[in-house]
Amino acid sequence: MTKLNAFSRLLDRPKTETEDPDAYHWYAMRVFNGRVFRIRDEIESAGMETYMAMKTVDLMRDGALVYEQKQIVPSLLFVRTDLRWLLGFKHVHFSDILLYRSGKGGPPAPIPDSEMDMFMFVTSAGKGADVELLGNDFSCFKKGERVRVVEGIYKGAEGIVKRIRRDRKLLVAVNGVAVVAISNIPVQFLEKI
Image (cartoon, rainbow, N blue to C red; front, side, top):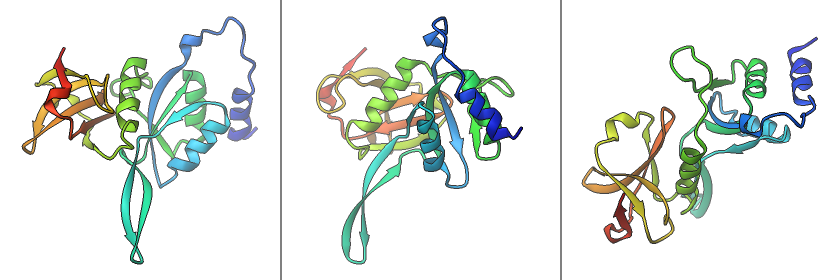
């Protein structure tokens, strides 16, 4: 039996009424060799939810202004699924993806829904125009005021405010995966938590 056939059996397994709906979590993966859209489409065709942080950029091509969608965090794909399905998918796509894990050699790290919801909100609220990637290590940014945005398109977003390159930015993170900074939020739109 081929790997793909074995994986197809995992996909076709019947869901039981006793299956715990809480077993579905968000997981992050790095996709290699420019295959992120192909992998996303394959996951979605299996019925799983995915998310990629995208932004619209202005480009000049042949003297014409063109708008293009680009990933804010290149090659990063989030999937909401159960661990068994994720490990089966990883087995089939061994050289195409890297799963973010909890500790060296640990199991894939589930992302708390509240953290993922906030990340999806801030990376999609303004078409991603004001969002930039700062890396994946949130620990070096934790010193700052914890705030909530009370007005504007990011209303409800929570994060840490920090001055970076003389500009005040709101930092939101998926711990161990990505830290993004949002600029151009007026100080009067922020309240301390």
